[in-house]
Length: 171
Image (spheres, rainbow, N blue to C red):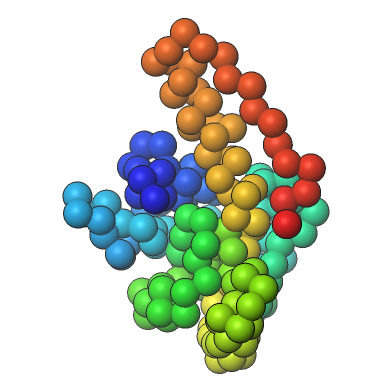
């Protein structure tokens, strides 16, 4: 969880930087007041272009998608890791987000709990006004390591990290 909140080395921050996003709001603060969910302004785009950009950033063959396909996206929510929480999605939508970007929009737990969460999310996807985009939990965490964390280790320690990406990001 610390990387999810970290202001300089966090997963959310790496995604915001990759999208050249300006953080304008946030919610779900930790004890230090750092937000788990970031609300950001971005240059105007649409759902299809945003999906393509995210596939290129994370080097994934596809993204999970639910919700609405929009012609105009200017405000996004970024949620590190597993952002499949309907309450978070609703709060992001209430704060004006047009798109919700996270590692996972669907629960991938293969039991009754997972199926219940998956069905609940599909119900929300039918009524939301946002584009809901999952870029792969693993790929989102690898990206922050490839960019911010690797550079931090190189600057602060006498080490040259070697990163090994997964062969399949959607497991």
